[in-house]
Image (cartoon, rainbow, N blue to C red; front, side, top):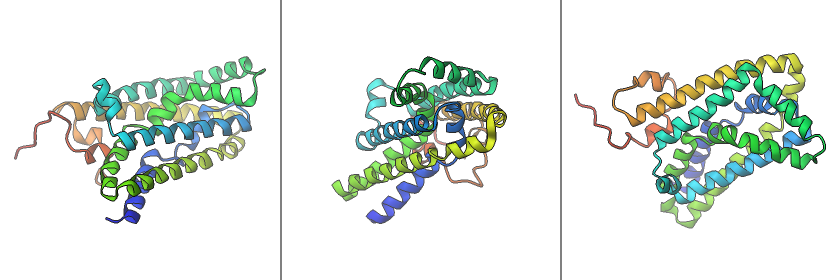
Length: 250
């Protein structure tokens, strides 16, 4: 595999795992009621965070998780719990009320200060683990190993790919205004509740995969990773079996 193939494969893997286009409705729901300029600044801050976070794991691997003794399955389960809390807020309509309260409290702040306040609220769990979850981190670690064969050039290509993905995140999230205008206030409320339910299901799926990767035959494979015959393998499967897992016997 040459540098060009490495760049294309890494880009496709990150794009599929982060799914910036698919997360546009969720970003629109999470930033409902904010101004256009504030939403765009928030998108920039989230993208900067995503770039820094992914670059860190691309350069260092799993050093941070190893330092704290955290496994990828545990990270996935914890992320699923945080994602579940956000999904519950969206499904019950609490998110709209909290956003409205935050907007009233920040009415006298500048656009930048309000965007920073919203970024602090969304960095977890929207920035991580929804955007930058275990799958994206695993992909960064896997392709970092591939980049070693190209030396410094490989790492430069990897960082450039991460930067390109983050620019796409900014561009995609800037189109949330079109979605908000098309839906209107009532439509946005309905979409937020429906997406909240979907987000809760995604959170449970995160936790099921974490349990599958950390246990032996506790969760059925087709439950943790459904539709595998129709989709590519998940990043967790690319990493191989969980530590301590017994090989399958025939």
